[in-house]
Amino acid sequence: MRPSQRRTLPLVVFLLLCGVVSACTSPGPGQADRVFVNARVLTMDAARPRASAVAVRGEEVVAVGDDADVARWVGAGTRIVDLEGRTVIPGINETHIHVRDLGFERNTAVNLTPARNVGEIQEMLAGRLEQLRTEDRLCCWSYPTTGGEGPWLFGLGWTQDRLEGSRMADRRDLDEVSREVPISLDRIYRGVAVNTRVFELLGYEFDDPSTWPDWFRRDPPDFGPGEIILRDSEGLPTGVFLGERAPRLVSAAIPEKSLDRKVDSLLGGMEYLASLGITALVEAGSRMGEVTRVYQEAYDRRGGRLPVRAVVYDGWYRSGDPQGIGDPAAIRERARALGFHAMGDRFLRVRGAKSSMDGGMGSRSAAVSEPYVAVPEDPLGAGNRGALREPSFERALAQYRALADYGWEIHTHAIGDRAIDRVVDLYRVLLDSLRAGEPDRERRWSIIHLYQPDEPDRSVVEEMSELGIVAAINPANLYYEGESFLRNVGPERMARHTPYRTLRDAGVRMACGSDYPNNPPDPWVGIYQMTTRRIQRHDRVYGEDETVPLAAALRCFTINGAYLTYDEDARGSIAPGKLADLVLLDGDLEAATPDDILEMADRVLLTLVG
Image 1 (cartoon, rainbow, N blue to C red):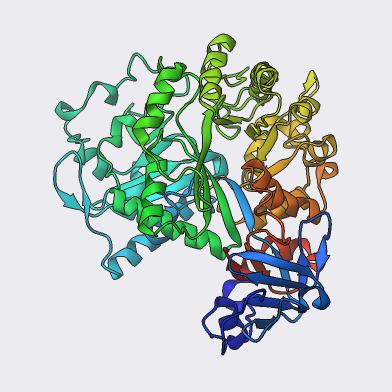
Image 2: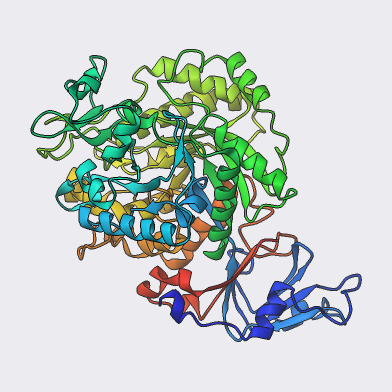
């Protein structure tokens, strides 16, 4: 069902839900503001999994059950809304997302995630360019290298692993979209593609060798594996730069968004997330304090009430970063310098730090034991097993200990089995030590992504359960990137990819997120993937025995997400005393087919955040 086909509530009922139509009198003491009846309520509360009525007073649920259970909360000022058999679920808790560019992407940039080939990339860019011109929104951006201003076209969310033949859009392809407007496309896994106009803003003219820097003809001598300047048959840059350092050769020309633009984008993105049924998120920040500053500014601008609740794991730390990061004094100084003042609010909290132990599966840089399937285009060659970001266990341990000493929860990116093993070993050493000193203090550290935890030589799933490590997983990655994962690791390992049922049966809590902008932020795609194991544009199912029922998948997107951030007593399920974070869906969710679930975002009629 597409948005234009979406069924809607009768107007008066919709207005009542939104609080637009006022009751004749205000609710009195002991009365609910709103009572929803004749509903299919999936509570995610083990004590009462299903109900037909919910009473809400202020920001909280005061009663859940049947008509008799909510009757005592009904007074002269209570709004009673008949939902006519529609479904109510708790608000979705999105546990891994990078929201900052979402509003910008929906309003200005182009999300290239759906593109299957270079031609589709060109069509999407040309369409946005025409839209921005028509709406007179193409200008103005400040050009850092020239001091001038002008138009710019931004794209994001591409990776060659999702494109036919792994062919990337180069400067000539982008020049066909526009030769006059600078174009830059951010890759999912550290990379950028630019058109010729961007080179010109740097002062480089392809027809004038006197303007060429040394790297035009040869890679910088300090480039390591994975740092790639794609070159044409004449050895000149194609405009595609892959890795962490290579993109910096052209990034100086790309405009930086102002703080106001970043805040606008964040707030717009959060409003869009609410339309999908998301009421809370975990921002897995990656820019050492900068992302958290944007959240704080947005919080202040909105008077302390954001469109959805946010918990930030700031990107202060990554294994292998410069010396000093492992120094507790340096970490404390970082915290003081940031100066955040909303550390415990229901709408914004800074909970801990995000770390990274390896790269990506699509980019073949995740640290695996068994080499990737050999392909000609792998720059690291046959036998590539990826790499740990910090090879030294002792150095990584010192860095993690510094974070733990400051009191942060630790949220670590680990995809390949070698990286997952390393993180579990680090966590074990630290958690055993910390729990010996503070046996009553709970810690909910997590591993992000967790693609290959169950390898033949060692399965860490039981160890994760024993240590209480949360699996902060991203089922949407398997749906959207499954084809490239299959090509990189083969069918046997593909069947073991993020083993949902194995994790659940072992008692490991799974908390789910989309990992936007790597994937669209639609949570229903992840729920569909967990219940079917299907991947985009592919008929065969890999790991069908690792599917979980709909109810289990919903828990991973609701109450388990709240658990990750210590919020399970406040949200994540529908129960008396909890926040009224509710989502209204058209129809009976439990009767939905898999295809219905995949399109469920079109059936979100209303999202209430408290």
